[in-house]
Image 1 (cartoon, rainbow, N blue to C red):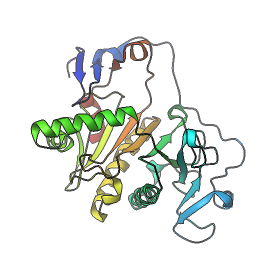
Image 2 (tube, rainbow, N blue to C red):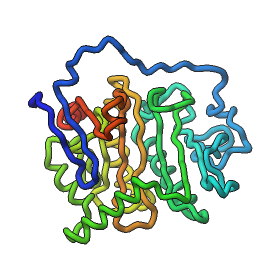
Image 3 (cartoon, rainbow, N blue to C red):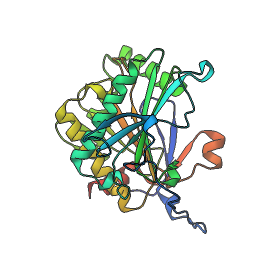
Image 4 (cartoon, helix red, strand yellow):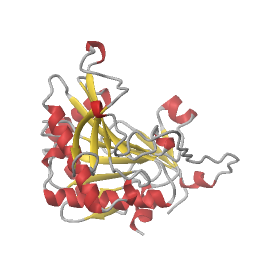
Length: 307
């Protein structure tokens, strides 16, 4: 891999990243660490959850559950506030306080993905909620405020501008090329050095203009607009790819965010999941210019995942 910098444009979005392999060798006298400190009782452990907040449990009865869904106790948006209308939930990924998602078996990750689909389907039936974001913050540098492993759901009547722009550009691409831009990206990347994982149902790869070190995307090969459309084989394949990526990130101690990129009932949207590790900090260049500097080329990241 050459050490020269290269400016790369995102596949079809108006975003640019400066890939700088040599920058990773620059001197640093500051070392950042992901610090986790357990304080007080855990209100996500079985028997300690707030019963008034419980929405639905998956597996077992009473306090014997595999995955638990709660209303968010401190929501940013609610169905009762017209000025900030929306809905939020917390999904407790596992009853085991000491386990993180990377530690869990593939069959449990399948269950979690199916819970994501269940909550997406249920919330999509609520009035005036046009956008549903299922996401996970793992580690303090990724914004996690509770140690016990959990995911979240955020739904709002506002379609975020970045999502709206992506849908518009994808539609323009389809009008011009006659094909789905996401399907075309998958076809290209599964043959590239950025491919991480592939089977008959999904493809995972490090995106060409990765904004984050070791960023990875997982796509279904079948054109689906949201997670509720996955079949059993696709859920299993997705879980295998996610397990692989998260285990590798855990091996080098990286915090991460991941989220389901989906817009319900938009046939041009192609469902995928983005994993964005958080070992780098956006500083003056990124915040001042909008240009992102990434010192880990996606080709290098993909090779790391494939080892």
